[in-house]
Length: 158
Image (tube, rainbow, N blue to C red; front, top):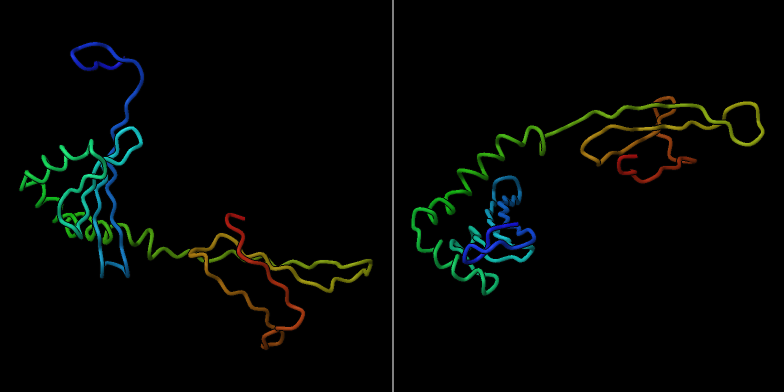
């Protein structure tokens, strides 16, 4: 077990978790840095760069908020995280996330309908593309076909 109060052994597990978030609006035009401290599933306190100090979210978080707010170097470090951590990491990771582009794989195959021996329909499978917004059009002799075209919504990981 874990060592508890007054050196006595306790049973069970305790979880102390910190979550550091960067929230981006319109690229890096508006950036917010948030640090959340959670103990056993309960939010104790958080730092929000829009506020600039730690705020207790429960009575148990009040002593830590008071202590951390009394550390000028820590508060300055947290306030600077918007540029030093968030904007910096946006530049590092955006080629693999925000700017990521994957060309679709396209497979067109004939399909028989009913008991007719000839194929009178075409199926188009478009897969493996990113971002998920896509527009598929059919053309015949250079002109877009709109009649008798049936489409489905994008199927996530389909």
